[in-house]
Image (cartoon, rainbow, N blue to C red; front, side):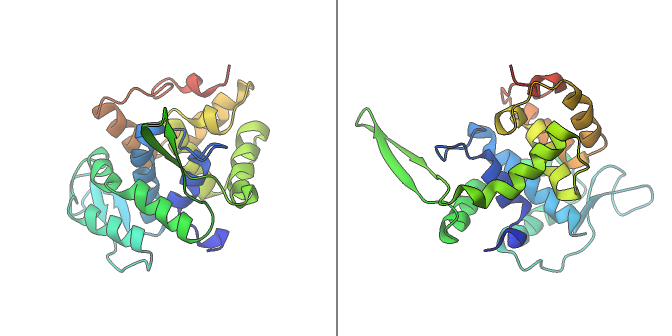
Amino acid sequence: MSEDDQSLCEQLLLLLLNSDGRPVAGRTTGYLLAGALLADLVLRGRVDIAGPGELVQPGRVLVRGTMPTGDALLDTALDRVRTHQGAEPSTVIGPLSRGTRNAALERLTAAGIVRVSSRNVLGLFPVRSWPLVHPWQAARVRLAVQATVEHGSSPDTETAMLISLLLAGGVLHKVQPTTDRRAQMRVQQLVQDNWVASATRQALQDRGAVVAGLVDLPGFIGS
């Protein structure tokens, strides 16, 4: 699997893995990956939110194309979205999250990008992690995020989506620590009118997730 073949879901998961190979988003990882699946379907022209005079109410989920993408993760996601056409955007995040974390990890493992590591805590509790086989395999995505947050570079569409989802989950500061408060304005502009990130954030709030910085935009600034 080349970098260009990676879905947004896989790119986001690489960003979410810390140096030990454990997801920094904890139990919210699945929801963030679901947001990335939805974002990928939007960028591929399969899914959108409806405007006035369309098949469903304005602002609701609308499937614009049912042709398979050729990516098993995305095609499964598209099938799930189809069953929720006409729903509020935030309500599709939960169904999209089911099994997504494990499926994405299995794909990255099979591609040799991460490896599975297991250990027992206190000799009783098994803990698994997925360290990168070669750190440079996530470098391109991380550098793109850094260039936007730290240096104010204009991101491409995928990078803007990834940053928006990291902020929606309150974990941008864990992926790209910064003390530059000017970054607040740059990132806030990125997430403005990003309905996928807003839907993901709302879904996390609806499930009662306690995520630092989930609502408060300045919360992503590292201390």
